[in-house]
Amino acid sequence: MNRGMNERDLDVIGKEDRILLLREAARQAWLDGDHEWMQELNWTLNWLRSGSMEPEPPAQWSADNVRHRDAAQRVVDEFLAMATAATPYQGCLYRPTAELPYGRPQIEASLRLVFAAAVQRNALLDALGMLHGFVDVPAAELPTEPAANLTYVHGRSDDPLAA
Image 1 (cartoon, helix red, strand yellow):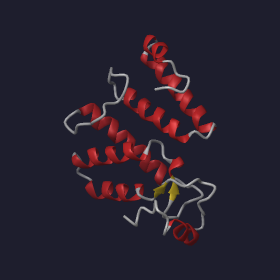
Image 2 (cartoon, one colour; image 1 turned 45 degrees about the vertical axis):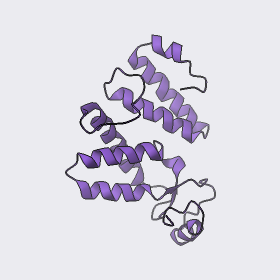
Image 3 (cartoon, one colour; image 1 turned 135 degrees about the horizontal axis):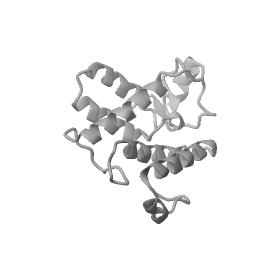
């Protein structure tokens, strides 16, 4: 963790205070338009809410670990709530990644972990498909009209359907 957040200072405060500080830092990052930093802070906040005493999420999650499953399920729930919320891009196939509450890799890892342990696999497959509609395009450049939105992204090197 960086960007003005001193690890030593965070280590000496309690977990609840750390959560409050990180939540405020994530809010400020959102207001500043620093969406990647906001997503990283949200990822750490989610892990702290899992009840773990570890200050940072593990690099690899396990479906056998209840804290990992709970944290992953929270990521999936937050992603689905955001992905189905009314936005200017409603009805569009593509949306800017800046709208995501976490980074795409963390959301995808969470979807895969929850999928591995899930009964509702069809809904999770749909969620994984929806995630591919988030592209690294500035929101100001991405059309909100569905037909223009679709043609804008097709043919770009980062077109998720080209792979």
